[in-house]
View 1 (cartoon, rainbow, N blue to C red):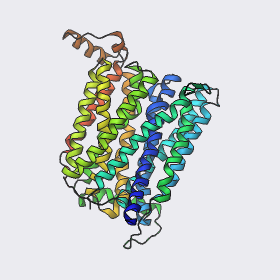
View 2: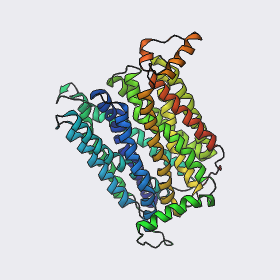
View 3: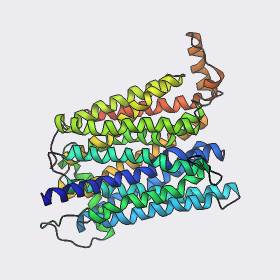
View 4: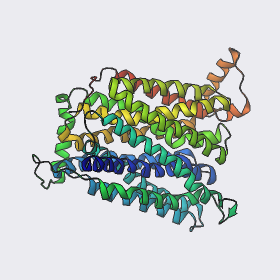
Length: 448
């Protein structure tokens, strides 16, 4: 009984990190930072997308190496702790300079610099957090525990929005305090991330592997180990194919996450109060999707589950691209939430079925390499499409003229934001390419 209670405490303490770091991803990446840059300070989408891409490039270049080093030492928690503190510090500094520097361009440049630090550490921490999953699970319940973590993560997104909202509004239960503003979200977000992540570092224990001698590994050796891991993926059928497919999936998903609030504001004319409710609704369904997909994954396998999840992404993005009515946008919000929660719930167990347990740090590093290099291209594609494919673009004019001849009529609002619909189309094409590659990934149900 004591061992059972201890196991439950470790599972909860591992999963609560998802709760903590999703407070950051929801409030900073999805909700407020992009809007603060693009809407409040009138910068092009490309400012934010380029900065985001830079932080992901740094993750892609360094995390496979750090993953290999952590494998050699048999430790993940120290790396997770350092990166978590780095994310919290970067977020706190964004909030500090956003209210203390008067010059707009200098303020934005400083904020983008600290965002690189915060997002690099946030994304890097996920490598070591994911690699701790087998420490708190068994082959029979890995899907459920992964789903529990993702579900808690989206619960964190809900509570994070609600906890930070009074600071943004400058209003708590009808009492005014401060001037409010999107920039007021950042310091509270950093504090809440710190508080809710503490149980992970206190209660989750890493097992000592008797077959693994802790040793120091040089950077050159780590690069060689990672390169050999890439070259030798043929030893583990499906790993390379899954990572390539995941590249295209995450191209689209990362872009949806960081630009959906901007899309809702610019294209659908939704204010912050409405957007908060929209994201709360979508996130609630993400929690439901996480639990359901975890159970389905344990029953039919993560490969089949993820296949249907990606089909769901393609359908929902297609509706969002084509619709001009907010009703359909609201309907697709919960559907996207289910797909988002299900993606992370099934992809982590899928990788553990393809890669040996003793190399999970390295392969989750490669997983980060695939996903994070994808998060470089997706936002850059979005920023480029939004910048160039406006209604006066020759290609756009040709498409509009062709559709009008077929009987379609477009309002001025649709024409003025047509570049965003082209951007959604690019994301759909990325998903389709990834799905075609993913079809031949081996279908296993147990991790190695």
